[in-house]
Length: 141
Image 1 (cartoon, rainbow, N blue to C red):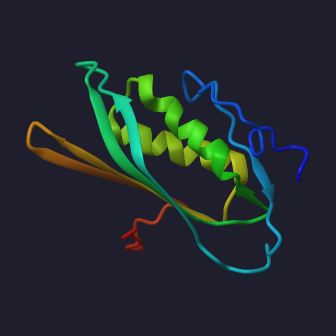
Image 2 (cartoon, helix red, strand yellow; image 1 turned 90 degrees about the vertical axis):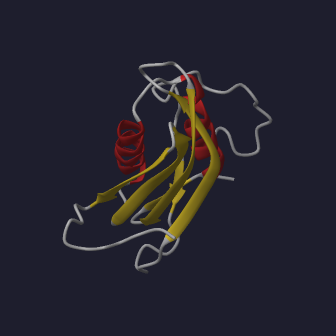
Image 3 (spheres, rainbow, N blue to C red; image 1 turned 180 degrees about the horizontal axis):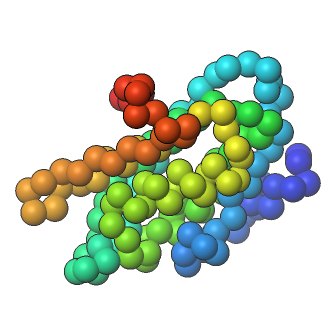
């Protein structure tokens, strides 16, 4: 096992209290020469509305083409779970996840999509990408 991975294989069950306290761990990509997508799906995401304090729930999907490193999934689970008491607007959350994962593993390309449950009868989906893909219609299905 990679010695830099502290959560994988550890029975730790104490969740970080905020995304700032969470650590996104990585491991070496064994095929950095290849152009392949990794799709991570977290259907049980929750956070808090910054105005009402009420819970927001979502399905968060992260798709990326790794460069030299890949995100370790247990650390990603701990990171995403750390939002449960975090107050932020849905759009802010999706962009925060994009920036934090970018900083951790510097992928070649990445898309983060949040499909948030309806509140007040309106569903919200926010999607952020790297590099800026305004001219490309990349979506996660």
